Length: 271
Image (cartoon, rainbow, N blue to C red):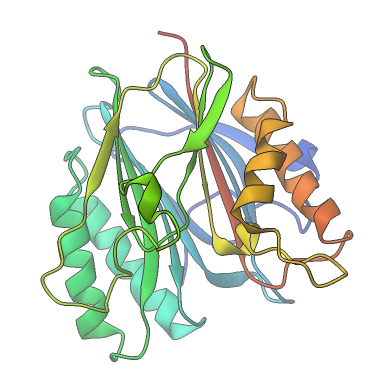
């Protein structure tokens, strides 16, 4: 499976990040080792992907797109159960659907069609979790839809406050948001609509980050993940992202992740 994202080296060194502006009607995608800073209208997206194991490709797939009018951006992060052909099949289908819904801020059709595609094309054995974010640069609205994926982190700069960005109530936080793609037919996915202010961050991540394991065998978990985030520099997407990946590596005792690790940091630019 071939993607068009800029490739990084096999390292978490922040100096290796590649910065570029996404073109109108472009879709940038990867399931390979990646370190890049993408500039979108009103939004910066720092993307870091580190597949598990000696190969360059893993079960995490991420996409960043910009509509032909340069108004609507979409960022999607999916985690497929398994590797190899299952990831390739989902990746190609997700690209096709991202292209079809390039102009749509709402993600109802995208999630519906992708859920059906996973059920029909991944042999009934594989499934995928996914979080998708739509961003409208003129209206300043961010729409988040979650299919069983770990909830994003949300930093509100004016309050200097971190919280979870999730569709369910706090009392339901122990269960996954939504249902993973491919498990149930005719499922509807809830959405969360927010209006980020200048300097706000939204952090997407795969369970390779939230389930990182220390040398003693302890799992990081959501509470420690949030604690790490609160202690980091939130002044830019890249500053936060590089510190976040370094903190995860330190928690692992300097070792490589046991599962694919993808982190996408979104920052609302000045209004």
